[in-house]
Image (cartoon, rainbow, N blue to C red; front, side, top):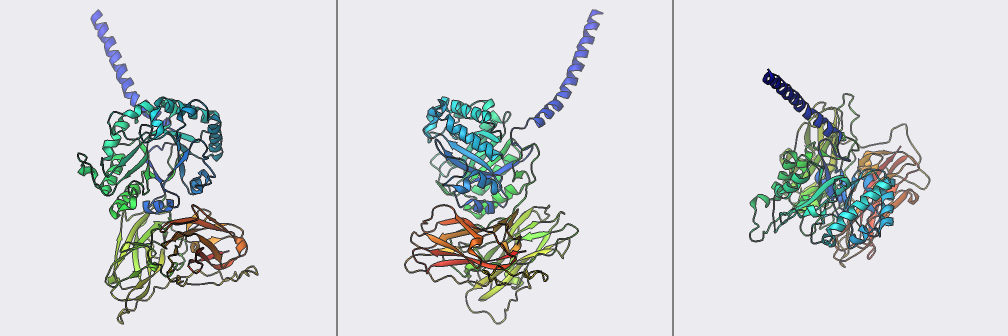
Length: 640
């Protein structure tokens, strides 16, 4: 009897234990859902990038999707985070205006022991208050790559830990709770996990990160560089790949040959596949998109670029940082054209503004934007190059579903013979609202001449819904009498008949249904040159050609400006806005004023019109060394 009673107790305990075990995963799952780290998405990965000044929109354009994060670098003991005099475009407020969350890499330089000792507490408090005033989510990577011998602070692991804890504590005291701290060492090539010597402790870290590079001399797979770090920290913190990139061309040192890692496009594809499967706790990555020790850019080859675009096209890859537990849906933006050096200035032509049909009441919509062309090493507006007969030029295509229904589209090239054209689009043919797709048309003209053609994108669900972009192509040689391309009819925006405003007396706007090419001056024999390219405008939440938006009087539109020194001598330039009153305009240019050959400069003109009307204006960029050397872009602005 006694034995039987004991067995009953054992059975009861086993049953109870089994019930508790069955309930445990549910409880654990519930807790994990509720304990996401600061700004950690429930699922998905933040897209990030790091670039030099003036190259951010190149990366945005190349990526094909709006990044969520932008990397920047600041330095002890005096750098500020906002209103940075030498890097305005990397100031907190400017990055926020560009729709990205800052990732501030804060470098202690040679001061790490003094920081640990409290000698820079006042400076740290100023930065904490600055971040609190900013008020939006941001990340700070303090003393990154501390385990790397290339930085002075690598020599002082105890001080790295103490200074990290000190900075974290001061930010909490100042109420800068909008800051997430990322502890971010570099990949340890020794395999000894030397990064463990620099960890401040879980209480002082919101995210952990690691920097990984696939070097030309020492190729390694993404998996090799991430696996040990992931195994150590994935159960405790979300992971950010703080800096990542790969060489394009490899020349391995003896003993470092690694065929699995010696193809950049494959390396990029493998990175995305691993983040999607093996490493789900990687919640952010930042691509280091510069030419420095190597060509780290995603555009280092067409294959690498496509691999990156295909990777971020997955809806797991996010364009906005969350403040709670639900990611903001990713939206593919209309993107600023990329700037690449051009050799011979061509007539400046802006694509003819084309009115989009009225919004479809059934929720179908499409928007296609002006893209650049590739031809024999040239990358820029098709109007600025000359094509030889029987050679192929690749004209880029991009369109986006602007409706509220999933839809697919057909692309039509009108105005040139169909047998000249081969259209290719990449990615899914079915687009959810807000999603876009890239592609191109390879045009192989068989005769010389000047040809205007349109790229027309038509909804398959409702053929009355479409959008078009017009281009002009110059082909060397005489035109064939048998080929007479006829430009497709385009709808030119005109003022509403009931509105006939009289502009202010000082303004004489001339409506221009089509913008005529403006020949650039002949190359200067003394070696001075400039090229300015068509840029897009920002207005409220719109970002695209200024011709495709209507401006309200007394509100400001920001028209982008870019120019490049195409001469052989260092030069600086004057920007002049003509055709609208000077008191409407405020010009701001960023970066160095004096440009070496091949270098460019970004900026904008903020235009605040005070009278309704249709205004054609020009952005003229003039060499200061030789005012006879200049280039012009022409725009049309509609004020209603």
